[in-house]
Image (cartoon, rainbow, N blue to C red; front, side, top):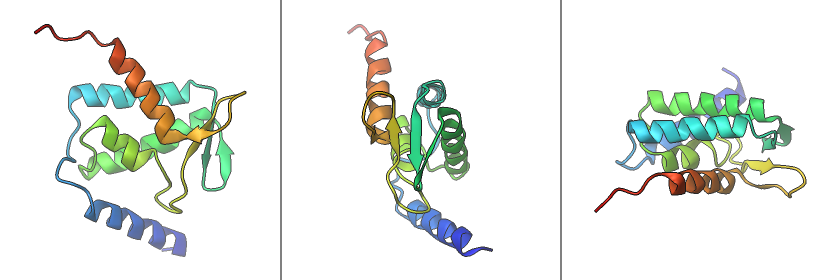
Amino acid sequence: MSRMSCIAALLVYLMAATVPASAGTPSPAAAAEIAHLLAYLGNSGCAFYRNGSWHDAREARTHLETKKNYLLKRSLIGSTEEFIDRAATSSSVSGERYLVRCAPSAPVAASAWLRAELARIRALQPKPEA
């Protein structure tokens, strides 16, 4: 195993060791929100910064989907917010924060960009009647 693989495995282990009890399996609604966020990113045309370089939106979606699937197999994502916090905020390898840059705007934290879209789609949901 390479040194980088060992470091990545250690970081994932440490991340899993600090997971609160709320993690588990996302509800159907949370799974749909996560799928929407991944599609939104993949179709955005924006650039995604991770580990020192910029990637296109399609690569970003693939990367976050891989992280999501890894975390789901270990029951480490129970909500859309946990997906953002554990998969879409920073690199599990370097700890470096992910950024999204949609021209002509300046780069923003990927977590803030995804949370803004999550808030937008939730605001569109019909409100339950009392």
